[in-house]
Structures are given as C-alpha cells and as structure tokens.
Length: 384
Image (tube, rainbow, N blue to C red; front, side, top):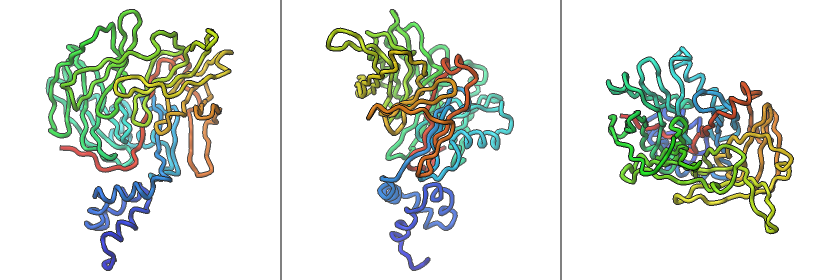
C-alpha cells in the first residue's frame, strides 16, 4: 500500500459504492480520510458514476413517519431497505420511547429535523449515516407557543455547508437557529400581501427557502416563499397559475429536479370552444409558473378517483397518484400509466414499494406529503 501514490488511491476508492466510502475508508488511515473528504475526490466520484447513479428516496406523510412509497436498492448508497426503516430504527436507538421525539421536517439533502417534546429541543440528523446534532432551545422557548416551519439548507455541489431551523411565533416573529453561528436569532415576519389564512404547518424546504400555501380574498390561493439566507428580500407571494379554472384537487406543491412543482387536473378550452380535462404540471422558475406538461387523460372524463401524491424528485415527467390500495404512476413522456403492486423489483435490483392501505381515505385526503431524498454525495453536515 505504501507504494501507491495519492492519485492512484483516488482512482481506486472512487469506484467503491458510496455507502462503503462513507462508512469504512475514513477509519483506515488519515491519508484515506483526507482523500475522501476532498472536493477533488467528490468530483471524481460523480464523474465516474454519473451514468449509473440513482438515489434512494421516499414519499413521507408530514407529521409522522408513515411512508407512502419508496424507491431503494441498486444505487450508490447500496441500501437494502427503505429510508423510512432507517428513520424508525434511528429514532428507536436514539430516543427509545416512540412518543419522546418525532420527525417534523424532511429535506432533499438527506437530513431530517426531529423535535423532542420533553425539553423542546431539536435534532438535525441523517438517519443513514447516523450523524446527529442537538440544538437546545432558548429559555423563553420552553414556555412559548410556536409553529415549527422547518429546516432549510445551504448547499454547494451537493455538499451541505449550513442549515437553519425556523420557528414562527404567534406574533409573526421568526425564531431562527443557524449552524454557522450556533445561536438563535429573532426576525420580524413582514407579510406584504393580503391573506385570510396561511398553512404554516405544511412548508416545503428547497434551496434555502421555505414555501407554504396561503389563501387570499375571493378564493385566491398562492404560494408564500421566504429565503432564509436572504431575509432582506422579504416574503414573496406567487398566485397559482390556474386561478381562472376550477381544479379537481386541492392545491398543494411538491419538488422535483430542484424546482417547486404544482400539478392538477383542469378544464382547458379546445380549438372548437369545448372543454377538455387535462393533467397539467407547472414549475416555479424566476417567481413565475412555467407550464412543463399538459396531458390529456381519456379516463379522466369517466371519473378519476385517484389522489395526487407527488412527482418523481429526479424526473418531472413521472407523477404518482393513490387510490385505496392502488398506486398509479403516469409517464408524461409517452402517456403510459401503470398500476403498481405493493412491492416491485426491476431488472437492475431496484425496488419500488408502497403501503398496503392507509388508515382511511379521509386521512389521505387531509395529509400532505414530503419527499425525503438522499443526495448524490454525503458530506458530514456542519455543526458548531
């Protein structure tokens, strides 16, 4: 081993599965540890695996650890179980009592936010690598009421450089913990728009911002966006693109390919003036909704009882719906739709699974879903 140069070790180690790289070579010697943590090695690994890479991800019900569907296996992480199982085992090992702590936010960089009820503290953790950091509350927090808005991250080339835990007090004041300072700070929330209500309990974290649904006068729904790494810009309000139509489903958003996405079935006018039901998908780009797919579904006209779940995090042309014990995926590239079994394996060993049956249809209708995604590269996230 002593005769191999550092560049040769880079070429050898970069061909290992990502999970093996993260868990084993760092413990061998300081040289290997230095190689693996270098940006050059990360770029080499990505270039060697870019054509074969696929990441594990799950669609989770917010407010609990219930997994609606999951994709895993045959990826660089070499995971043999769904992400939900790693979350549940991590919570059991860390806290023991199931009611002691709960997951309150998921991210697309492999991190979750955990809230411990007994002392109002928070934990930022990666349930796969088991890295975990506790954030103690301010003394005033223990007595105060607040909404847990979520966890935002600052990333560069897939590496988490920092994170912020965001709370909102009833007087509309943001309480923010920053990993860069290790301190809590207070910022006033300036909502420069008219609203009747805001759904603070269901935010989406993306690129350092939180997005949530709000309702204005005359049934005008819009998305509120706050960049917590540029708070001087204030809050933005973006109306939904189909306010002039009657959507089939309640308006909710999801994420895909690092964009905020929205989909619904709406009636679109044809050339002859008649109306046609279409599944439309938009993405938010430069604070404007861009229509990326508009697809006619023949079976919509005879009734469409499926409930929208979300969009594939890596492919905005693949969308998912749920009806009782049936998972439906629609490929907007070619119009194919497929009913999936509870557990399916592809030829490359990849697994897609779905829950057997939710508690009831009303529960699903009232639920909000969050994508929990492992990144292409996992660097230990910072803490102070």
